[in-house]
Amino acid sequence: MTTPRRLLFIASIGNKAPYRKTRHSAGHLVLDAVKPLLTPSLPNTGAFHETWYSPTYMNESGPKLVRQMEKWSTRQNELCTKAYSEDSVTPYPTTLVILHDEMEAPLGKLRVRRGGPESFSLRGHRGLISVCETLRGKGLYPARGKPAVDLSILRIGVGIGRPDSREKGAVSDYVLAPVNEAEMKAYHGTAESVVQIIGEELYR
Image (cartoon, rainbow, N blue to C red):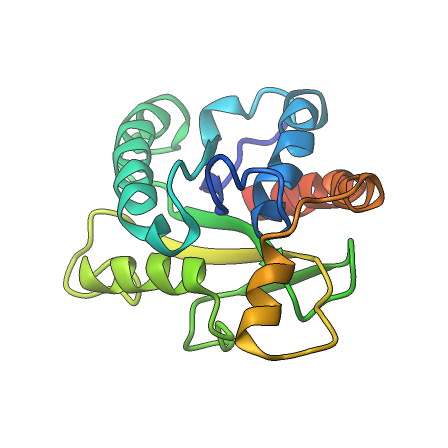
């Protein structure tokens, strides 16, 4: 198999317990289904990708996620550049793949967007805002000076639908409601498509 062309840090954002199995944590629930498929679907690429669940509440996602991504990317770049790069010098770019819930898409439908708020509105998504603000503050994205990581962002939103009411309280109640069996099946049903997207991104 051809050597991947970039590193992928695949991170899900959502809420920790007791809100782990709610609509707002759909990104975590999708990653649960994606992880077992990665090795058989993308053999011999394990050094080039990492999966990670944000351990915080949604609106606090940025600091720990970015710190972990930087640490992993720096370490793996050194290893992969020496082992796989044609000149053993040129570093690999990194894509931060963010799995998150998406109210603007129907249940179980994926919405894939490349880039941060300069490309598409974050639509008030507190988790994405936290991540993008942390990246900007560190000069990683948009890049400022010579950042430690040559970074791209790929956002994969899984549709959770939205309540009929757009009042703040109704939205909060909706996203923090427990996921039912049909919803869980819909989230897990996106896993093969997500793995395909990840595979395409590895070789982009």
